[in-house]
Image (cartoon, rainbow, N blue to C red):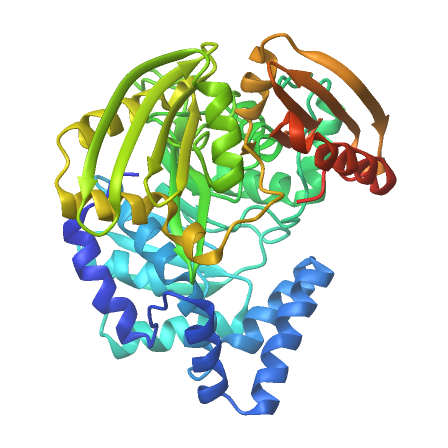
Length: 493
């Protein structure tokens, strides 16, 4: 997503002033935990986390945030979310103007609320939260920093009502109570489309807490007011459910929803999207709701080395080879990079070295342009840049050694369905479609395509997985198919 560098530059040192630290790996983060907290404090910290996610109810949530609203524990908790604060904080901050009265619903200890107030001194901010200890800390922090355009209140919404009227309401990771609820299922495993099931929609609104909270916010939203909403709705079933809840209340996007990517310690997270919504009123131009899967740039790309790359390379090179580039590297030896298009399904790049190493990068049509850019890069590449390119694409695999069971191609995204549907000369060997309790309808299929064996998995909650192997190692996928039916939860990872 777009980044406002000015706010980003201000926000990073501000977060550090709260004691938050940046960590690039889990070992460093958990090492800091052990250095900072006693064994008893660590035990209490873990107990609160486990209790919150086990209970997943309002009381457990309040106990969790009350228990962690301490100056010694708070940095430990929120340092995991440093990149989240940077990403969401900058995105929200640039969208606050021209509001004059802003409500931050679920403000917590006020980290972002106070930052917004600092950046917009002529705007009045009200932060509400149901954790008394969090609100107490927010008040103390605002007083310490001498921020006069913000106040904080304890509010249990619902059942309590919110006072005032606001031309902007902020809510980030607050409206959903049930974080693991997958949302609305698709009609079948073959589609991403949802039925208009109003009864199921209402049940989910009650179960997740969205109904009471959203209705309470609607009562205090000004007639031409806006909402900035950011929830854990990356999952399509949750996203469609949430969008329909907004649409039923007359709220529609006034700017394109933006999916956000950030790091949580050493994990890459795709989250959101960030919605900017308003009521349909005269003079306000709104957009429609998009119920299609989100596809990130590069999500179809797959990389492999060794036997998987060699076997897949032989299959791919039987079709169209569109370009071939070669060269000699002083330490890596001679090399050849070939590019092509296979059956109008895959664009690919195959690199072979005189040392015997073979590396493959392959992607579907949606990422064809990325591979075309790679052709241009390799054509005019310098020796040092070539070494860096090899490291970027296959460095970790080379050092880890070859995995003899590595797939020729693997995709765990919604885009796997498009590739599966386009596989040439597809022949189904075995398949099973069944109901699996709360997981709903599932489909597992083993078959062959041109000189390859495939395993495909799909369910009504948008999980898709496609794995391709060369014919010589087809038994690996046959075993995965048998294990999947035994465990009834999809192919083993």
